[in-house]
View 1 (tube, rainbow over the protein chains, first blue to last red):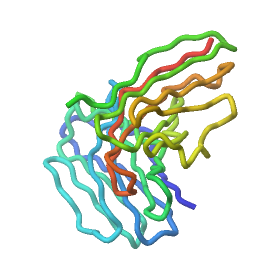
View 2: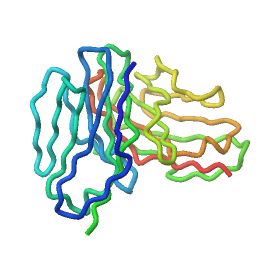
View 3: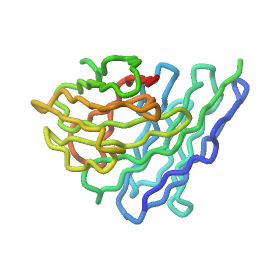
Length: 116
Length: 115
């Protein structure tokens, strides 16, 4: 069965600190996609990144970076030099290619507080 | 272009009443999804549409929930005889095609409160 676990329900860090959000997934499929979405207080989920199961290269986008490790079924997200605007709920998600349609399975999210 | 639009943004209703929630996807997006987000919970998949058909209705929590999509565009999620446990934010998303790799674009949601 497919499952996404975000063990950290809530994290608080002081501005400018680095923070890593953990994501562990379960799937029986060999082809799948992993996503991170950000949900700011306004409520609208914002897409951050998509990775497919065949591409384990880490990715960096500005202050954001992602570490995908198939060996540990993890897709962790790191924010470097955090800012108050990074405060939001962050969701990790999984979509299996074999599943009809694109039902995404979301984790329960990690609420991130960046303290000024 | 415009993003996914949902209306109303907030809805307060009395227990036992019916409610309709509307989603207007991004123009040209063929796939449309409904999710429910309860307080402190993740996103719970409800239903998706490819065009006007709904191949997967497995996420609908009960027969009080139904959804339709007409003209391959606007979708309506209907909840009949609302219960207090239906209180949640209902999110709609759309994507260009029906493929697992596709990014889903979300609306801001409808916050439903059942009194």
